[in-house]
Image (cartoon, rainbow, N blue to C red; front, side):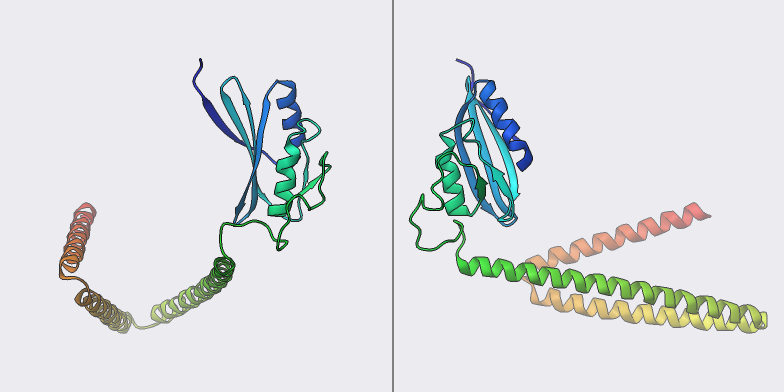
Amino acid sequence: MSAFTQTFAPISIADIPAMAADRKASGWRFVQVLAVNTENGIDLVYSFMKDGALENFKVEGVTKDDVVPSITGEFLAAFVFENEAHDLFGVNIKDIAIDFGGNFYALSQKEPMTVISPAQLAAREKAKKLAAAKAAKEAKAAAGEGVSEASESSKAADMEAKLAAMDPEKAAKVRAAMEAKAKKEAAAKQAEKDAAMEAKLAAMDPEKAAKVRAAMEAKARKAAAQAADDAKGGE
């Protein structure tokens, strides 16, 4: 007896009729239509078996607006699964050979079957909205940073023009003062970052803090070594 094998292949809604007709003509036995509720819609998995091989064809992200063709014209037994997908998951399947018109199951509420509670679903929807708002905010900030960078570039160009028009000795003093100011500001920012990191380390478990310190020191040594190599290469 040959070993059992299983395969999965993605298909579109439009591919379903041709897929079913081909399975029928090739002598495959219909197994099931499995509906799975996901965050992107309903996934439908059509399964067929022949000679120890199980083939699965997956349609992803089916929505309430999609119209799914029935395969009962090729495999009548599929009517059970298609009525179930319609009643429990809200899939709009057309031309089911034996169509119960939404009454295959006696449901207390007309909602698609789901493995999450209403509270979890609401939480997911809220998370999606928050993520979208965050993405919009970040995009806006990125656009603002682009404007800021352009402004800084324009300021730098203006300063260079002014320095070029100055007496060389005076221009050199101005450049030196600007560089000293930039270094002072960079040192202040670094000191602020160091203080914030020290506060975080102080709040950590001592063993974990020691590991973080060791990693930071190793990174600093590596950066210093790389800088030294770059300096030698430039000589």
